Image (cartoon, rainbow, N blue to C red):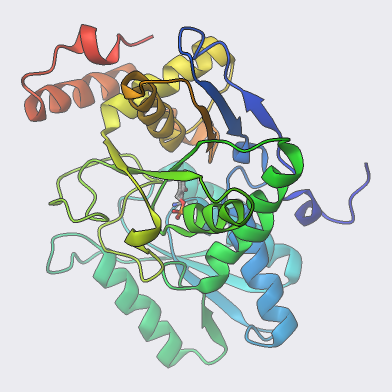
Length: 334
Ligand code: PMP
């Protein structure tokens, strides 16, 4: 296979049956490997789709300066896409950004605008958005991607993973279990699959401590899923159950994934695996379950795959769940 550019390598990801990890379960669990995308994550899809559609319809001029508030996978993906499309890109980040991500964005040629002041909630979200708005006012030619409200975010997953799953699977799945932040991935895939499989049940996986589904905020460390505000794109009525998973449970499941399946994945992959383990345990019958694994493990070497960090998260977990017996409910660290 010869591609014209690395962007043509976005998508076309394989689906893997997790038959080793779920050996003792009556459920069949399959995972689409979004971590195989060239920029390292599922966010390559919206980055490419939004920029290319924007260039095609003129909403992103060919000499635009693209800006987005993101310190994670979307910023990396946009830096890659903008590099190839000859656009300037600036990621608006805050001091919580991981040093690794900062360096990756810079390697792709992206600029960094780092805010330092906290907002009224004690976080940085509002300050970051204010910084973006100031850039839009003061620097002509600046275009904001705005992933939380951009309809092309979910559409990229509808035409992307949604279409590919229907092509690759010969029969319906019962459950789609996906992590949520902007909700673009979940809504895009679910909307496409439901057209073919109307009985599909959609389960959202949220980070414990995230406010997406109305729970009160509390500290969480893993990036990827969860949010400190409710995205404009989120439609609660299109989602069935919501399962909350904390940082410790996510990290344990990541370690099980690499131990049993040889898949070295990021924090939110552990979150969906932990959620599926919980779902399978309470189902009265076998089921066919599909998820996606959004990014690779390298960006999490200092968290998920670091024993000191894990032990801090374990203490926090026990503090919030004093009744939990670690051995009986969530297994032991690998
Ligand atoms: N997992 C990871 C690792 C991510 O970076 C993201 C996007 N922040 C998600 C899951 C959730 O995707 P979405 O924003 O489409 O809900």
